[in-house]
Length: 435
View 1: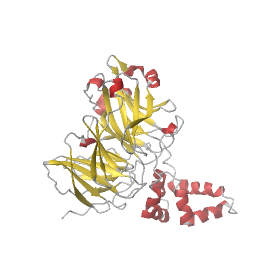
View 2: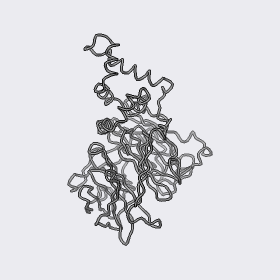
View 3: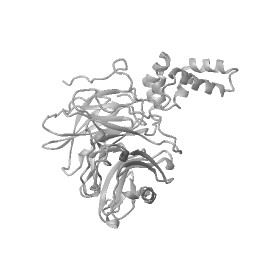
């Protein structure tokens, strides 16, 4: 019999002290009341601002309408204003209403070379000016210490993090609310067998999430955990051994994996059937050797980011819903980045890593995060705007214990300017989702 799920309550685990803004010295109650008073002053239906404020503060329906327009991070602070607001914001009904309105990523978590269990948080630029930075300027966490063992982030999916420790214990964690749940062991658990987990969560469709587990048991087996039932289910399907099950990506209500050569594999979660699509990787026949490619998640579906050795650009493709072909979505021209950071050009070619791709609600809000020698930048390619997020060259390597990654296209990266682990970047999306 599986042990019960371990859940944290707000009484036993305080909210992360780091989810604050630069104005954290201002009292939360005063800020909130000032916010409501401002709305009340704009109201023409009430005779005075005082009566309007009292009306709004006492009406749960009006408060709900106001809170639906407020960023999640502000809502977390608002819970300390009064018991009424705490109960309203923490209620399952409000969370269900608010969750479909996903906030954009506020920042990125990176797993650093200096310590595999320590994370670096980088706030993102969120507006159209150099001063419009995410309201979350301090890390919600730097280490994950809510259980024993060395806990690492495995995946970020629409506000929730899938984590695991070195004892093969897995967790679903909401860094905004500091709540987590420990997943039960899957049915054919064996401590000597490696497991590969992928989280699937879409708050626009359901408040529940699923976790897909791949493991070798005579063949590559599949189990699906549902937060709605709290149980694992063994599928009758098995997977090809060539599938890269360590890098599953959620989209189109399915988990997707790349398989060699030129094969896309996906598991439809509602049908619980594995599909194999032989589909040519774009650019291969046109541009020759591909340096790297990876699947990326977007609000509309699956994306493929391709970096070719002969081109000074990235090509971003989107898969059709019938999986018939990849079609171009973006050409990310890197000439402006090269002009600003010419040292990324070396005798071996362009030296950079794509750490993240974010598709904005508006086209002009879409961006890539690139790691260059000594720099981390955010490039809004639709408006040709660059924001420097970090300058590693100003940091002493003795302060972080940086170690270079020794692969061919990064061979000139030194210990001082090579900061993060490729493929270990996780977006932080503020969310009230329950786990």
